[in-house]
Image (cartoon, rainbow, N blue to C red):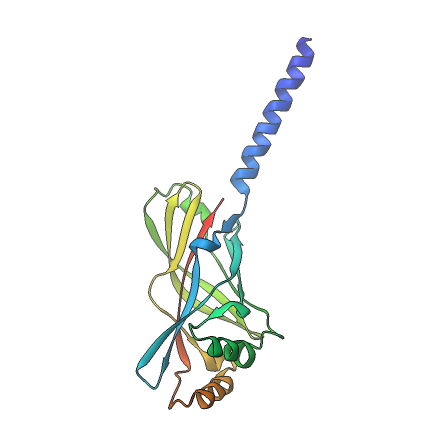
Length: 197
């Protein structure tokens, strides 16, 4: 009986330690309802507009790799006809269903970060869009919201040049369709990404 109890105790310890390890090394999952990816455009040299994506998903693993998928068909420019033009002319969602944002954060540096505090890191993120994948050097702000929750935001403004992604011709088509004098080819990009585990 003593031997049996000992086996049960060992099994319980093994299960508990396995559960603890799984929790400790589980991926951080994107809390999409409390996250956002958007970009700003300027038309006619003076009119700024905000555009966002309704559907994003992703995770942040314990090696520090962030992988975010952006559903390009979920673009929301607040104007339905423009949403359709963005999907069909710029993003060509039939060929490019998603865009991908990826990068690295050394999570080990945040194990002891106090809840409610923020830290700035310098890193490189990659944006894969319409068949082009480019790297951008950025500063990110990592905020510990709770023991099991962190938020990642840019520290400052990110700028994306449409020419780097071969989108200038598509933007020119949009300009003609909308009867505008100009649409800037350099856009600002912003996001806040909340991860939980």
